Length: 393
Ligand code: HEM
Image (cartoon, rainbow, N blue to C red; front, side):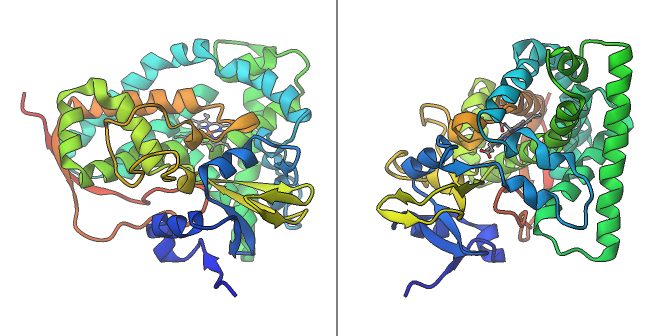
């Protein structure tokens, strides 16, 4: 009898890659927590993600609406739906994420990135997460929404409260906090929708309200869904980049002197240390995958973090290299739920790192163990103490 492997031990969260390698050696198997089926090989992960008929996302939303919550629009957001409803909604929503919206945002993203980078190099001893990686995507998403600037950092605590809902058996105090966050989000987003309905402008909510046939509840669920989708992953992309570069000083020097390498750096970090490690699905029928039968109604975890280190797809997969060709699209999922924000996330990371590297001579990580996020979905350090050396001008 095989020993159950556990995806959630602190050692595995600190470094999941040895366990992923062990998983890839065999076909899909059940793991802890909860006996979910781990899918680790590149081809199998792609098979799962491109087949919403057998590997469904609908039903995952239920875990966001436990009995102690009366209402949570996140449970009904795009990522929790299957075709044909998903197809209809996604076609309506994706228009608001096109190049026009991104071009509109680009100058503001650059201004935010430069302000944050300037302050970082002036202070020298920093927590890269709190001082750069978190404020950049929070302020960008806030701008995208068109919310009050003062709410930018609230977005992260909203996201934390939302993602804590499925896992927790919360204390009464915690339940009250989460209910408070949900009510606050709903108040803010509803007020925003009413405002934009009265005075439309060039912003996400006005664009959404212009979409023919969209309902108020669909707009609201989408705005809720973007909070966890749009902040944490981008925070970890930026933070993981700095962790990986601290371990690869030669590559840091290459991108610092040649910023044209930044897009390549981002692609290789997305592959080597992906901020989005996995996606969950539920099987709708008995399914055979790599010769193993997974019963109907099983929870499946498609491990992009493992697939992106699969030797069958990426030669010398455990080696970080700026000379690797191609993009790491699987880091943003695959198939119908492929990340709507992939272009935005890549743009934020590129602009953020350009602003930073043009002001840096180098940096070093403070000694000590990093604390990593305790999630099988999103991976990154919770804090990243750095000593920054400003560029000699
Ligand atoms: C590095 C940053 C990011 C990563 C690694 C990432 C990763 C992902 C992944 C893996 C999925 C697929 C989930 C699934 O298959 O169940 C996804 C979906 C999604 N992402 Fe992202 N994401 C990032 C940034 C963003 C940003 C900045 C936004 C928007 C502001 C965003 C919005 C979305 C939305 C709306 C979906 C759902 C798409 C659908 O269900 O059709 N993401 N993302």
